[in-house]
Image (cartoon, rainbow, N blue to C red; front, side, top):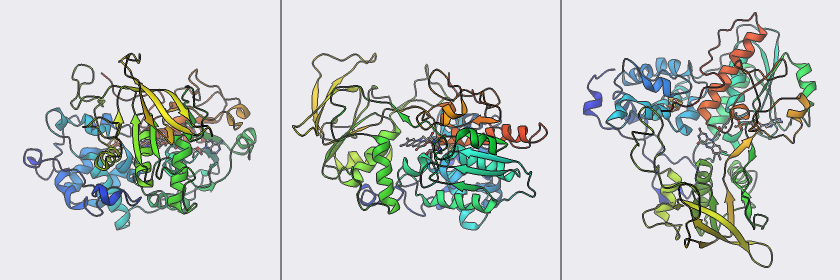
Amino acid sequence: MADPKGFLTTPRRDRPRRPVEERVRDWDEVYVPGALLPLVSEQADRCMDCGVPFCHEACPLGNLIPDWNDLVSREDWRAAAERLHATNNFPEFTGRLCPAPCEAGCVLAINQPAVTIKDVECAIADRAWAEGFAVPVPPDRLSGRTVAVVGSGPAGLAAAQQLTRAGHTVTVYERDDRLGGLMRYGIPEFKMEKRHLERRIEQMRAEGTLFRTSTTVGRDVGAAELRARHDAVVIATGATVWRELAVPGRELTGVHQAMEYLPLANRVCAGDLVTSPLSAAGRDVVIVGGGDTGADCLGTAVREGAASVTQLDIYERPGTVRDEETEPWPTYPKLYRLFPAHEEARALRTAPAAAEDSDARLFAASALRLTGDAAGRVRAVHLVEVDAERRPVPGTERVLPAGLVLLALGFLGPDRADGLVSGLGLELEPRGTIARDAGFATNVPGVFAAGDAARGQSLIVWAIAEGRAVAAAVDRRLTDGTTRLPAPIGPYDRPMRA
Ligand SMILES: Cc1cc2nc3c(=O)[nH]c(=O)nc-3n(C[C@H](O)[C@H](O)[C@H](O)COP(=O)(O)OP(=O)(O)OC[C@H]3O[C@@H](n4cnc5c(N)ncnc54)[C@H](O)[C@@H]3O)c2cc1C
Ligand code: SF4
């Protein structure tokens, strides 16, 4: 660290966001362009370079955080970019989208605001592209072995990049018309502009990775045939089976799953559609589900010009400080967090039903039934307050007007209707995810599984870590039982808990 007293003299400063009134009028990222770089060296200098850096442990990729904080504080961007890419294939994705469990584990966070690790990561990644440090890294020689990766989300892309760079000939199969998995059609543009995705995919093409889009394995290409054609197969198909809302009225017109709604808005941004057929414009919107996916629906509905937006969260409103008994440092605590979308909804007062100090979220709220008009269109959500055991509190029933109801209740596991699981004869875990052993191998020889398809619904940082780890396992199988590829996690690793 350039300044050993940086953490004593410099307060934490986060990357500034654009004013709400400005950013809800476009789909660009919510941050002020160019405002991160002037801050970041000073912020990196707050890192104490601890003897035992818990941020390493808290990051599933094992990012070498104090190392690159030091390099950034000394303005050695090239070395910082090298150090960052040594553990993370796609730091511009995590630098924008990761919830940063590393910051919860930062030693400074014991009694001060943590180092802005995620912002530093994002700055290094962006600078690497701007300065031309992020160049294609093609293999020196080819192994003559071929690998099929099914699914182009962060797990599939990370696995493909690692295996291509190790010299194998990799083809990524993707059923969508564009690559990127949930980063393409789930996550909205205002959280990560798709140009970041395009740039990485171009880098991967230049390295030799092959891509086949609009190809559903199990339907357009037989799963067993694919296995027979390649020396190994990696299944990285995500957890796309959504959870349903089992209440009366679910069948009404105007009730949609988040992953029916968000892809259409992303297609508008991509120029495929002029307006979304499910646009929230002028409608009262109720989002059922309090997580990230619900927040993405919220930000999208606000930008589409919804008349009002309310988000129902079945959990009680969390506190603003960590509960030291149940979630002590360095674990990632459940706290009341104000995402940009919540900030927007609060500032625009689009949620007349929410509490005065709230932000469009109604906590401890559960939908009881949906009611509609004579034409079968949804008109209202009937809800009730629930206690910690999710039992309805008598006398708390209320009704919210609703012209669009979005369900964001989470995901159960990989798609089983497309013939991939059955075609290969893959064994599943009782909860519906693909079963695998300690080496990421499924019950079918030569077939491996990674990402949300096997881990269950998770995060981009875990998906990249899975992709890197499965690549090491595949490389070991394809070579003489050894590999030089790193495996940051095992298949059963989970976030740190008390
Ligand atoms: C709306 C939303 C917002 C999110 N926001 C965040 C966030 O801000 N930060 C964060 O860390 N995480 C976020 N997540 C979670 C994160 O996106 C996932 O954990 C991550 O994308 C999982 O990566 P994956 O590669 O395993 O699968 P996915 O990203 O789901 O990719 C799987 C791919 O496989 C393809 N596929 C499936 N079956 C087949 C087949 N048979 N043949 C060919 N292709 C197939 C799919 O079309 C898809 O493109 C969000 C999730 C959602 C739904
Ligand atoms: S990937 Fe996530 S956990 Fe790891 S250093 Fe970056 S922000 Fe932190």
